[in-house]
Length: 267
Image 1 (cartoon, one colour):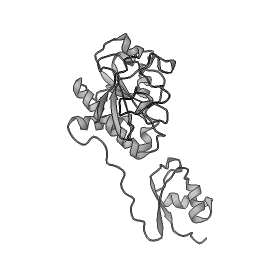
Image 2 (cartoon, rainbow, N blue to C red):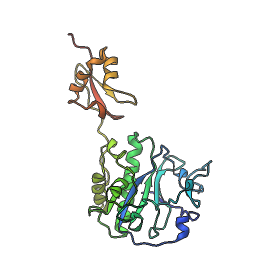
Image 3 (cartoon, rainbow, N blue to C red):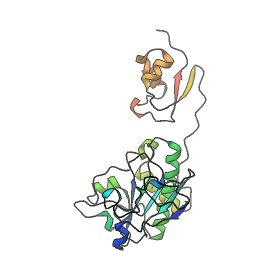
Image 4 (tube, one colour):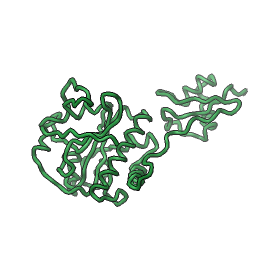
């Protein structure tokens, strides 16, 4: 983990100065396609880069809202991924609002992962690993068990538990890259034991068999479009589906490798 500190001292949350004893951690993601830390953390400390709009969260009410969290994960000006602590760990944040059963702000630390367009597997793996290491660090600091019910949750889980506002993060992002909060919790537990925290990167594409070609899925690809391109007719997409183990056409992911018949079959 690459951890820096820039406390948001001008934010009303920090000024209120309410302390608390962390009993858990809530994972958020920003919901906007901007992976740069400078969008939320400022002013520039020489690593972040200048935010030309000055719309970071180091002001009384960012975007006119009472919002503030304990940390952000995203890109520095040089393109590398890092974590910035933005509140003291034992200061009550304003990150999850409340529900009918109380407020997660009273019990949980909260951090935001800066989203890109949610489709880049390289960026996702970097921030996922950084988030795992941050949570392992905090769990050790406050003697938290990430596998215990309710300790390590995302915003969506907090809403379902009645302690947070109605948001869906991070389940709109993690599953696109084969992860979930369950795999995240397991990775944090593993990291706390000193083992590799994140799953292995995607396997390299296998060599195509005779009569096949390998195609790496790009933005906008569909089985119909690939059938038009390689087989001449869109209605032949089931041939590609069958060759790839009956893959669900709705679950194509950028970077995935598909096998495609090299030549059209004779009817």
